[in-house]
Image (cartoon, rainbow, N blue to C red; front, side, top):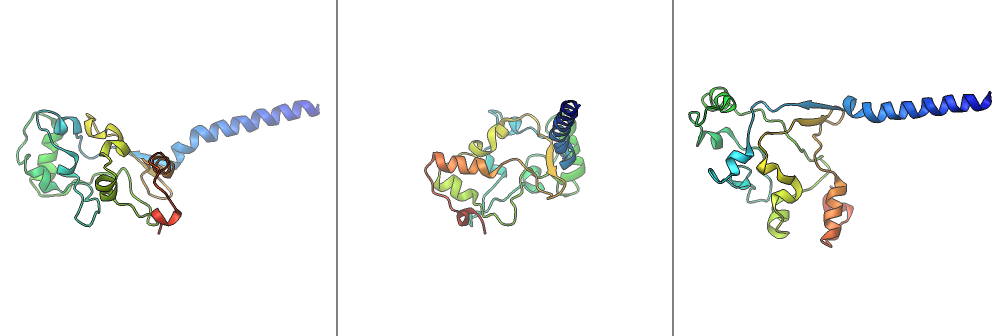
Amino acid sequence: MKHAGLVVFAVGFASALAAGWAGLPRVLYRTEAQPVGFSHKVHTGEKVGMACNDCHAITDAGHFGGIPKIDKCAGCHAEPVTTSADEKRLVERFVKPGREVPWGVYARQPQNVRFSHAIHQNLAKLKCEQCHGQHGTSDKLPLVRVNRISGYAHTMKMSECEQCHAEKRVGTTCQSCHK
């Protein structure tokens, strides 16, 4: 009988672990669609030919300028250029009234982290794709995945930064990146 109790416990324990493993991400994270569909592929392709920094600028101080302001979009989209429903929505809801698009943010650095895009692009000569993947050639924006507890959007992990630094033989100490 003792053996049967141990089997029941083991099966119950394994089931609880499996349920937690599968269920915790659904409980911990919420996903949100972006307010307007957007194709990086259209904008960075041969026809338009924009580069990442045409919209996602880095300031002279080395800080990432972030999500472009609506005036960047308005330069080309004062009126819809295509028959896209998303472009029409962009123009009517945001460009014409001069309202900023409330884009969901894919990555927000924790307050205890120091990070400079400029150092990584200018000094290390990294291309955007090396950290952000082929996002610039995507035809639609992915859902934003936000941690319900911390409020941070998670796309990159510290372990990925550490791996790259190790591959490039760049020394790291906690103080190199953390305040």
